[in-house]
Length: 208
Ligand code: ADP
Image: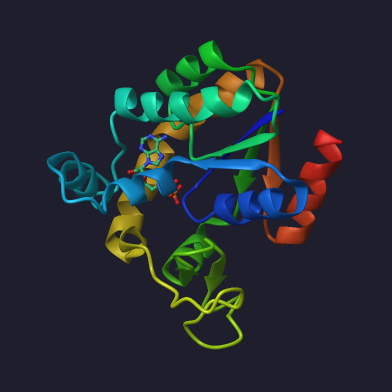
């Protein structure tokens, strides 16, 4: 089964993916996470990608599609359950995806816009196990330290307020056509994510 998570930056796609991965054994493919690893290298490509990400824009479709294709081909042949988080981001990517796999469900993770800034600027992530915390809503037991493996939590570079504003603009410009595209295919499900457990419960009910 292949499911997609759409939604604004900070809507909770990463947290939902982590639960699907830990509790329900989904494989998680996050293009954002893949790119964050790539930009740590000291190559010219890494520098270029980093500057795009820190401007709140999107990496070009050819690069993104190629990365997703490589990840997916390996997994989908094994008939696994996969959650794609942060991909596709536009119709071009959605068309590309439809040529390589069949998507079963598309969940649009919705949150109140006013909430988003607090969620994102308060977000802290464990660089090792990828657990996500929030300094306002979901603090670790010890400040700044991961509950599971003791690593020091980090803030994503693109979670600073000015970058978030740009990421949000990019999202607004591209999301509506994508929603229409999947509504037409009758695989689109909006999920309000005010409460993570409730959101997961709804997703579980739909996928059975
Ligand atoms: P968010 O959804 O919270 O903005 P992500 O972790 O999904 O964050 O993505 C971080 C950044 O990585 C994006 O702002 C963009 O620059 C890049 N990126 C992620 N996914 C894609 C994609 N499918 N196409 C192009 N760029 C992407």
